[in-house]
Every structure is written in structure tokens, then in C-alpha cells.
Amino acid sequence: MLNKGRTEEELFSFFEQKKEEDLDYRFILSSMCTLPHPIAVKMHDMFLETNLGDPGLFSGTASLERLLIERLGTLFNLPAAGGYATSGGTESNIQALRCARKSKKEIATPNVVVPESAHFSFKKACDILCLEMRTVPLDSMLKMDAGRAAEIIDKNTVCLVGIAGTTEYGMVDPIPELAAIAHEQGTYFHVDAAFGGMVLPFLDRHIPFDFSVPGVTSIAVDPHKMGMSTIPCGCLLVRDPAILSPLNIDTPYLSVKQEFTLSGTRPGAPVAGALAVLDYLGVEGMRAVVQGCMKNTWRLIDGMDTFGIQRAVTPDMNVATFVCTHAPDRWKVSWTRRGHLRIVCMPHVHRDRIEMFLEDIGEMYAR
Image (tube, rainbow, N blue to C red; front, side):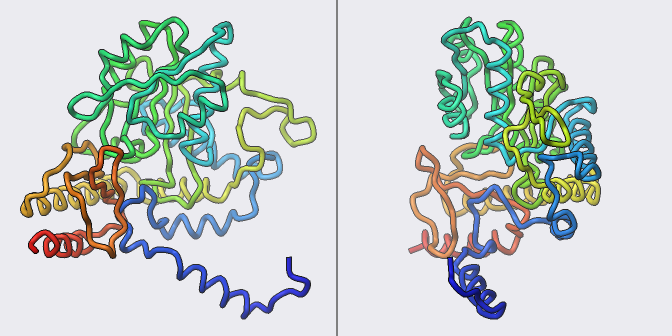
């Protein structure tokens, strides 16, 4: 720490310099986060000091969290769903596995069954909770093989996990089939829809993944991704609010005497931002955003095809992957574990960005 403070001018000069070292979002094609909606930014600023970890002191902000869960529950076909705002998909997945573990405390050697495509947060969760993680191979469409899942699950399985919008390929696992397997085994079934939860309800093609599917116990969704909230804002929703009760711990000196959340201090600002975006855009506005992203995804796929660059798989959502080994230097792309070029067509990836990328990669492959 400095002995003598800096002037405001010195501070801003230093921080502006550091901000300029960040990558420009206009050239980021690999992120599942995006520029926050201006409405989210305004609401974030309005609720900057609020702490949902002590909700009695910020009752208005706490009511916004309840409204956010209600809005998402309605979107997922269960307005009465329980849940709360998390720091993102990692926390939501950890909490879901905690719920699952608590539901079968009698099992001495518990395991969790996840697809090969599961987010790395499940490795963290299993490590923290001392759970064996069993991985199910993917089928030819890079979705969880339900038949293999049925073979791997056993009496010690406390949770089966399906992904609605895989991080690498934008695929949706066969949620109804997996839910039926979980129901037959009497097992908790968690759907990680951190990315897909704010995409799938707005697609023209119906892909079942939510509480309309019998057997789905909980859902993770991240408004700070396609919901265009400020970071961090995830949500965990559960079919029965009582599922969260076993997570409660005593908080005697706070304005509430018990809490089931993982974090203690929880920012209210991104929660207000997330709700504001949903209410500002409504279903029609969100559908327009998602459809725009999907149009850009297909323009990218079609454009790459003209250069002879094949798609790795036909995606369910706005993630495009290609059998390709190089990309133009000025674009920030990523590569899957299978070595495929990966691009996420988020709201900040406008059509002109797609055309510029296609022009650059076209020149590269024309050499």
C-alpha cells in the first residue's frame, strides 16, 4: 500500500492504461459473456452498495431477487420454483450437488454421473464435496449418450447431470430421456443451462430442457451470459423450494437467522441489472436478440462452408465449431478439447464482425 495517496488524475491515468490492455470486445469471438445491456449498467449503479447476504437491511433489493427467480421460473414453466441468485454457473452447480448429496446422506460412497462435455465446475464441485465423478461418453452428435448413462448410474449415484447448451459445442443433451432415467432410479437430476437457459426458450425450434420435463430437479442459468446482465449473476432454480432447506446454516447476528446460500456477502447490483433487462426487453425483445445471434451463427457456418471449412457439428444454439487449424491473429477465438475452432456468436458479435472475420479467414485459406 502506498504511503501517500495518488491524485484522482494519476489514478485515472493508471487505470485507463490498464483498461486499454484488456482485449477489445469487438474482436472477442470466444466468450460466453458479452457487453452488458445499458439498462443493466444503470441499474447496477443504482444498487451498487446493496448486500443480499443481509437481506433485512436491503428488503427492496431482496424482493428484486425473488422477482428474478419468479421471472426465470415462469420462463422455465414453473412460476413457483425456488432458488436464489448465485455468482454464476460454478456456484449454482456446486449448490445443486450439495442438495443432491444432502438428499442421500445415507450413501457412504456417493457418485455423480456427468457427460464428457460437462463444464469443469463439476470437477471442482466433486472435489469439494468428496464425490466420485463418473463421465459418460458423447454420441455422434456430441450429446450425452443416454444409453451409456443408464449403464453407469447405480445405487450410489446421488445426481445425474445433463447439459442444456454445452460450453464447447452448443449442444443440448437428451434431457427427457435422462430425466426418465433419473426418475426410474430415484436420483436427483440437475440441468446445467448456464448458457442455454437464456437461449432455448426463445428459439423457433422447441428443445425440451426445463421444469416442463418431469424429473428435472434443478436448473442452473446465468443471466450474465445471454441475459446481458452485469457480472456476476447466475441463478439456481429448484422444482421444490424445500430442496434448499438442508443447506441452511444459522446466521445469528444477521437480519435473517438462517441462510442456504454458498456466499455470505452477495451483491444486489447485478441481480437488479438482470431483472431490469428481462423486464425491459420482455419475451419479444429477448427472442429478437437470440434470433439475431442465431442468424449470425448460420451466416458464419455458411460462409466457412464456402471456403471448404466444415462445421464440426450442427449446433443447437449460437456456438459454431469447425474443422480448422488456424484463425486470423487479430481475432480472439478458442479451440475445443477435440481441436476444433470454436466461435460464440454473442450479442456483441454483430453481422459486420462476422463478415470481417470471414473476409480475413477467406484470405488466409485462399493463399
